[in-house]
Length: 174
Image 1: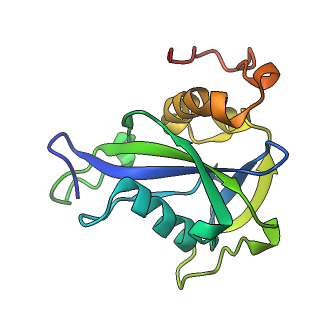
Image 2: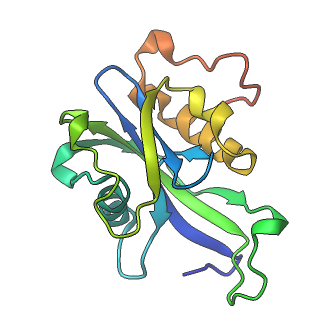
C-alpha cells in the first residue's frame, strides 16, 4: 500500500529494557543497523502491525512487551534516488512511519532473530538511548531523531532526556 504522495505506511519499533538501553539490530548480510520496522497491511491498524512485525523481526510476542507510547503523527523519510524502484507501480519514494516505544518485560534470551523463514537481522545488541541517531543510515537520521526526541519523556528519566550536543538537530516541541 502506497499513499497518494508515494509514501508507504510503516511502523517503527523501539524496544527498551529495564536499564534504559535500546534494542539495535544489524540487517542480515549488511553493515547497516536499525530498529525493527515494517509495513502496515491494508487490513490492520498500526498497533496490530507493531505486534506482527515484532514477532516477524525479533521473535517477541505482545505479552513480552509493554506499550509505553507512540509518536503523535507520521514521520517521513525519502529514499535516495538509487533506492527507488522506478519500474514499480505505484512508485514508492519513501516511508511514513508511526513509532512505538515498547518496554521488554521478559529476559532478552526471548529475542529470536530466526522466528520466520526469511529473517531481517543477523545480530543485535543493547545501545544507549541516543546512539541510534548517529548510527543509522543517513536518510533515516531525521526520523530517528524526531522519534527518539518525542518519546524521550517516556523512555528516559528526567535527568537523561537532554539530547547530546553531538546530535545537532533540535527536538520538535511537545
